[in-house]
Length: 137
Image (cartoon, helix red, strand yellow):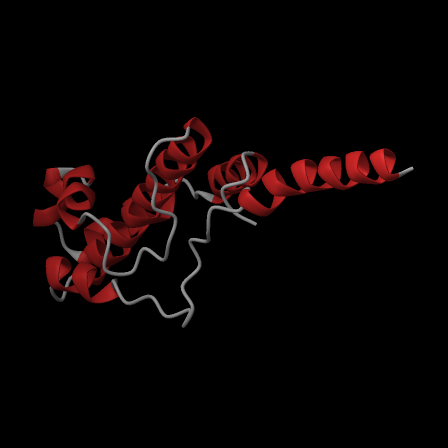
């Protein structure tokens, strides 16, 4: 009886440990404010079309970064799963934007922005992957 109880307790402890350890963190910011909009505004200046496009590329960068961090978590490498405010690589984000966009007006950029594909499906896939490997709740 004691042996069975000890085995059950040990099994529960062993099975419970990975679950407790599985959550790597969250990409959600506590204050829910997007503090990096100022960076995009600084790059775009008064060109609202360029600002919108930069923000869309920032979303793409965010997703790629999140996937990289979740893959690192899953592989047991060093990872950082945290709010991205103040941590984004704006040089890399700016480099993603086609260079000719920087010389175009808001009116010229408007149809380009409207035709840019959304990221909802990819965001869902990245979030599902991160949850499946236990990197996020």
